[in-house]
Amino acid sequence: MKNVLIGREKEQEVLRKALESPEAEMVSVIGRRRIGKTFLVKTIYSERIVFELTGTKNAPLYEQLQNFTYALQLASKNTLIIKPPDNWMEAFFLLINYLSKLPDDHKKVVFLDELPWLSTHKSGFLRALSFFWNSWAVNQNIVVVICGSVASWMIQKVVNDTGGLHNRITKRIHLLPFTLAETELYLRSRNISLNRYHILQLYMAMGGIPHYLKEIEPGKSATQNIEDICFGQTGLLRDEFSNLYAALFDQSDTHVGIIRALAQKRIGMSRNEIIGMANLSNSGSITKALEELQQSGFIDFYQPFGSKKKNQLYRLTDEYSLFYLQFIEKNIKERGELWQRLSQTPEYKIWCGYTFETICLKHLPQIKKALQIGAVYTLASTFRRKGSSTEKGTQIDLVLDRNDHIIHIFEIKFHSKAFAISREYALNLKHKLEAFEADTKTRKHLFLTMIATFGIQPNEHSIGLVDQVLSLDDLFQP
Image 1 (cartoon, rainbow, N blue to C red):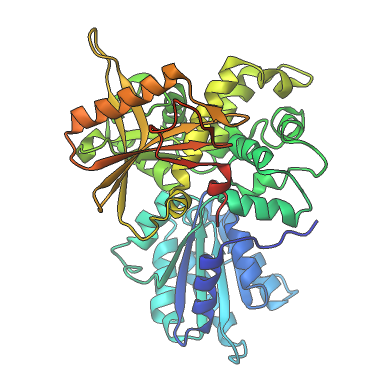
Image 2 (image 1 turned 180 degrees about the horizontal axis):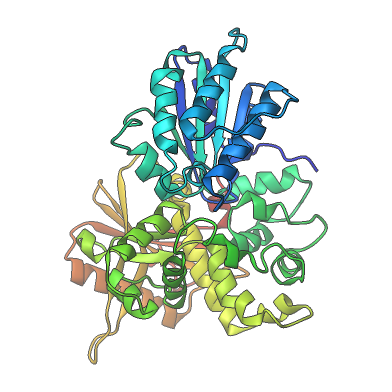
């Protein structure tokens, strides 16, 4: 089945504008592994790529240069054996020589994929790349696309470079996972017809990663697909976790330790709490690992309402990593209709609640659109009051502070049918509102806003308490 390009409208526009520009363009494409960076570039530039080189993970310099030679031979259709260059400066000179001989009737595209893997330690790759751009490419009818899965490396070494590549990036793309709406479109393009509740269940297990979603088969329910993909002997996601972080980060043990810690405490953790939970030493490497995980889209940080940056809480936002640690790893040796049994456990219900909250946090633009406040400036945060012997603790996972003197207090519930608010639950919601108002001393008006998969069932406890109700359909808005 041939893949088609779904969504990515803004990213497609960036690439097309680079092609139509009268000037040379250097485009950086950043995004986590399996997100579809290469597919995007090759689809838009399929007829314009005149040279393409992909880095090899952990390959020494001589192998990377040998791969360059093979790529140059393929591009030039040269059947003669060429001796690999001795260094990257020589390699880029050979590339200039090849490109200079091509017709100049339209814009050419040079595609350098997995740049962090090409730029091995002390290889001089980035110096040679800056030489290629500054001394030749900048004056040509060309687009140079540089692509990498290690987002933090790309940002630090290329986008924010203070050397030869300083301010040379002319256009930037940070490719994110599919939204729920894009996931629905992608599955339809593959002749998979599932309702939104089933799509949500699949999204909760594997996120909006196209390479993972490609494994979903038509004619099977969400439960059957999760069983096959995540627990089957040949399932793609059965052991993806062991390769995921090692492929992206050097010394990935620290990154995995952080992920494992965050998976244990779902309300979010401070930096010091992570260090204690993961049994890590307090050093700059922790800060670097947190930044790398955040820039690569595996974790995010949320600011407690009204607090300073140092009090930010980190949260695991990668759906697959949480699903793996919660269910796959613990049951790796089990056999037979495993997910069917696990989805009947209390642990499953807890996981559903947390993961649905995380997905809602990722779909804030859709939430704002549904509330008809898309043009209103808002600030998203969390709220937590620790319990004591006399005071009941409370947690609000999403607070949306509007600059028109309104604050939305969100209550997010995953449920298989319309949610009915009980008397006890209503009292708990009132307590949250009172605690927030008392602790923050806000003078803004509070709107209690419910997000529930199938909305809520109006009754005497919800009327007069809940101001607005959103459902799963609202999250599927483009």
